[in-house]
Length: 80
Image 1 (cartoon, rainbow, N blue to C red):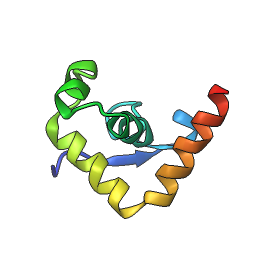
Image 2 (cartoon, rainbow, N blue to C red; image 1 turned 45 degrees about the vertical axis):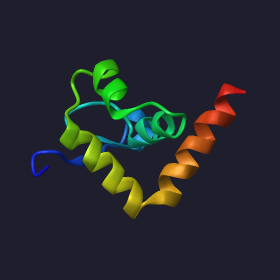
Image 3 (cartoon, rainbow, N blue to C red; image 1 turned 120 degrees about the vertical axis):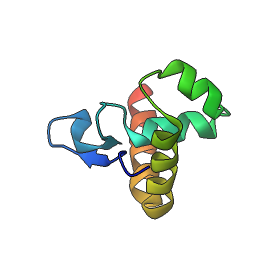
Image 4 (tube, helix red, strand yellow; image 1 turned 120 degrees about the horizontal axis):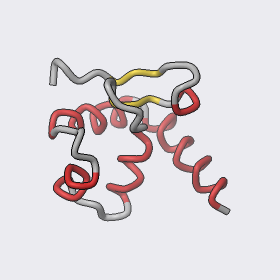
């Protein structure tokens, strides 16, 4: 997991925490997982991700649950 970094870059995904070398927000992975999506499905749907990337996303969420939950809620509000 040492090569996986969670990054927040202004102007990329509205500054949301993303898997380092991608523009995949942590909140999106957490939201999908909470809807029942398995790690195998996430890895299939996002072939650029590794198991270590998912572990990093879950660890980030464990450390910053309010930030990620707020981002999920904001995205749900945009959907209607």
